[in-house]
Amino acid sequence: MGWCRLSVSSVLSVLSALVLSAACRHHDPGDKPDAPAEPSDAACEGLQCKVVDCGSKSLPPTSVSGTVFAPNGTLPLYGVQVYVPLSDPGPLPDGVTCGNCSASLPGGAVTQVITDESGHFTLPDVPATTDVPIVITTGKWRRSLVLPRVAACQDTPLPVADTRLPKTQSEGDIPRIAITTGNADALECLVRKLGIDDREFTTDAGNGRVHLYNGNGANQFAPGFPGGTGAFPNATTLWGTVPKLSKYDVTIFSCEGGQYPATKTQAAMQAVHDYAGLGGRIFMSHWHNIWIGGESGVASHGIPSWQSIGTWNYAAPQDQEDTIASIDQTVDKGMPFARWLQNVGASTTFGQIPVSGARYTLPTSNPAKSDRRVYLEPALSNNHVSVQDLQFTTPNDVPAGERCGKVVFSDMHVSANSRSRPTVPFPTDCSAAALTPQEKALAFILFDISSCVGVIQ
Image (cartoon, rainbow, N blue to C red; front, side):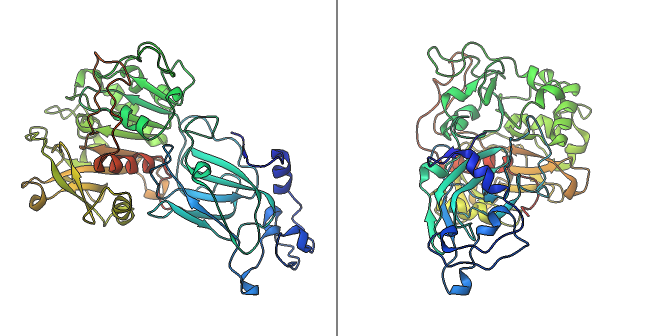
């Protein structure tokens, strides 16, 4: 994926600057705009040699700042990495890869930072020179910029147009995503609402980054749709084999209104398990609980190592009430999640969000094996006790530092009147309404599932 050109300078000049000799000379003021010369330092390399020690001059640091947004340009994102690469990051690997945070950033980093709970970042100690590369990335989402000039010992703010994640492949890297439709949920509508361009929605025969498969929801594209055309392949062709799943970085299974165990064979169970262990990211909605808890009443039909993740109650009344859910602030990213929800207007009471149509198939989860994100407690939810969203890392039977993938289970559905029905082509039934509180919560989880496994180094 190429750099986004913000000046008439060519990308070749950027790459040349990145591979300068490790032996740095004494710089004159012209090498570092608006700054005095720096002493030589034989330990620096490439762009590191252009970092000015502003503190020794009682001046503020050389920095670049901005806010990272979802592709829609309106929803700020937490935990996105922003950095100046030491060398050319190169292309991202194709297909599923182990996404552990212990891996270094592609190309190395002269300086790096992650966005806060408002999506904001201030990248410190940026090289003060011309043609400075900036990479904005989480998982396989990546936007690359070249700043024409960074002045020393002051901040350079970036506009929103340059800091949102890419809508199209021409703007940057987008993970390859597979979505299975279901007639009880419409996660394909949520992904579209987050700003990915319609041209990126195709079948697996197309060149888009989002491929749609038919569970039992929408099963074809609407006439005149600018992306894919024709009918969606069946979801069983996606989750049936590891090679097929492994083409995707993220897979999203929309609720079908029932477990439909005949379409999820034991061989498919093993394929999904193995894909997640390789580094796959899987988001499962409601009755896709079968992949984790197993088939209702059939203990042998499931994934044994996942079945202890929680205690399931498939016979629980599905009242689908409008209620108040709580955010578990004790788990990894729980406190930032709660703050982010408040910052984006999803939460008016800190640590709580309104939920429309809550479900109750997961009364409790195992805190030793998963992180509960959103849950219902009796005092706020008409005496219901239920986990609405949880996440665990995979393979879940190896030490945490060796895990590569993530699985999310959600009993919260997409709201705002989006539907997915076999009689209505996509995206005809997708609502254009603003994101609801629970859709914002789901958006946080969907972007977070793309991020690396573990703690960013």
